[in-house]
Length: 126
Image: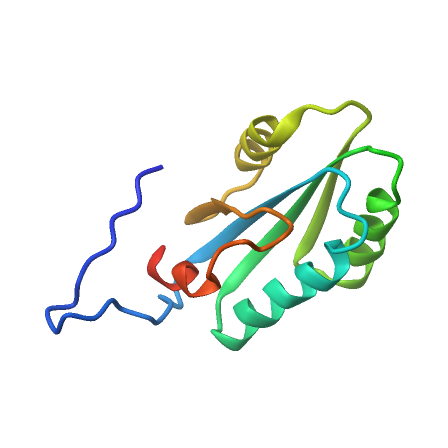
């Protein structure tokens, strides 16, 4: 995927989401029990506040720490969260490729469970 950030001519970047596009977000998860629920809900809040049509895929490699149980809880509670689980540690690249191949959306992205990026960047993906 190539992301091109275009200047709108005024020296600022467009910070609104195209309402006709759906965003697929993959969150690869391994040993994230302590932050998974809080950060997934924080991401959802940002996406909802910006009126973004989205699907979040939690792709969890089982580490035995309870992340899968948290993922199941989130997926059962929220219609725009799906869960993919693996018994083995397959890594971030596998998690992202697998989820992107199973879902049809307009914009594909992934974010680490620690949300270590400024989420405003999401707004320039469309």
